Length: 201
Image (tube, rainbow, N blue to C red; front, side, top):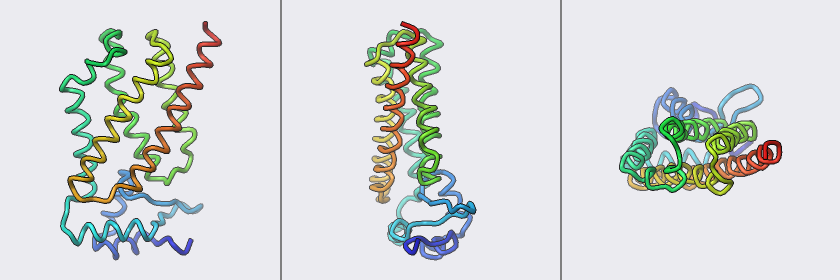
């Protein structure tokens, strides 16, 4: 792991306190690898990107992520969700549960990035199961179940990318990891839906 450095080493390169680096990691903003002993290790190339950003005096990456979450809420509030055909088929209770889906997806994504993908399979499966079982419960079709997930996935990714781009923060690594995790969720969703359909035709 010669390309990896410690939390303190990362803080020294970026020029912030180690607790700031720890906070960014916990929020999934600065990716880290966990050693078998539970210590954080950072890829030097990732840290140097953040250091370059800090020298330019741009928006802090944590603020960029918070902006992305606000953008998701605004887009949903502006009626984009209500315009979705699958959403129009739902009653008020089902709509409320789907609106909360963006939060569970975001939290799962943060956990995936902050642990460098460790145990991602079980987390992706759990979120995929949640979307699939909810779709079956509210009589959405196979395609509509996927559309519901893709709405939240695409809205979240677009908001994160826009926030990072506007802040001049590097986002290529983050974007790649977001796609890896959410693709796993989608596969789990489709597999779970098929299993539920076969067991309860």
